Image (cartoon, rainbow, N blue to C red):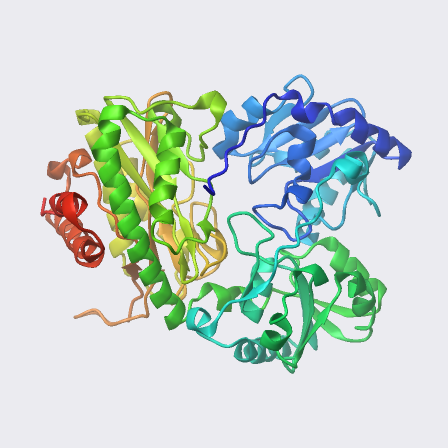
Length: 603
């Protein structure tokens, strides 16, 4: 089974490493040190060798940070991890603070005057460092780069080795465009920016541009590496030689030179006098420092692969459709199991998560999960990013709800879907709140919008039914999703937080409003949808984008209060269920198909 569970046994796991780090800090003349969650590649999910924050503190969430001072330390996590961080971190050693409200900058503003606070330039982007420098300056403190990370020194020989998973080709039948064509396009974009070449450090960009995939990072098929791409479309690709397969050089072609990462610094030095495009939001400060020291002219700008990667081509969109239909059959079998066998045996959350993966495995096409499955029974469902771990496991219980959020990585697409299921007979209150969430979900599914519209501008539509009744949720409404890449992909998103990136044809996003009653249960409905080309609306003046639904899995009709839906909303649910039956039904038989037909019957 690919499902992984955090099994950190005690909060002292991380705290015991704190004195070791402080000793190394003292050797380097540091009064403090910054420990971000991000690694050298700015990944969301990290290889074990780069889990520095978890090693130091015990906190294993996918977003966070820590600051270690001589006499105190703090861990920062956002609202998704409020319960997890307190369970994993020794509060006697680390103050636990909010990552968003104030965060690390506010902490640095209170640093002792004259203190020297170290940072590893490989782990911080220039944009992030600028904010941290301003905060330290307010306190009269100094931020100082280090050549060798004191945490790495303290970790020593116990630190796991860097991953060396084989890098493989991602055939054009899935990519929809050859790597040579992509390099030509990206070369033209580099030239349009007035640059001679671009340095790419984001693993997702490396995977997309060269049509390769790897296994260096759990849940995302990424090869960790870097590249220098020239305006003429030629490139140097820096990959650990141990990752190279016999067929890879031929796949990359004559215009791509494979290089050892040990030669990167020298290669940057060869760019003296050249104009080099590099993304200050995705690449670490180390790259900027080395380019400037070597005499290159740095051109700050968005990674040129970001938008082409986000706006999927027709082949990728069709692949996503097929992946979701296949995944939908697995979900139908899982939901049938939840609504029959599990309603009687009341399994625990781990057994629920393992069952969902088992059904996905049975498709014969699953390469990995796209993230660790969230299976929250009762009160645990009220924790939006809860993971089933031994200390908090609950069983399904009558009269409550089960929230399950999971996804799969397939060669032709990445899936992510959440369904909420009643255990036993739902209460009127549960039905009301589910239906309010559903109304917001429908509003986001059917919206039409003009070119130039951002996800930030749409976010309120999903919240309005709940706002009108005095409710809200504290996470974003939608995130971008990759094509057999990351389940979280930028720059597109739908959220309260301002985002200036317009939604473009081919971008895939989630639609996932929710409601969470602390101590009781949680509700979330999530499907993936793709932005369609602008089309005319009869009687209108401007062509409008819309969304095409990709995910097909039945809603729990027991939780729908039909009286709260408008006629158009009821029609949407009936049409969605009819399409689910038409697309997923042919992959099913027997009692599962019969069950799905009942679930998809008109309201």
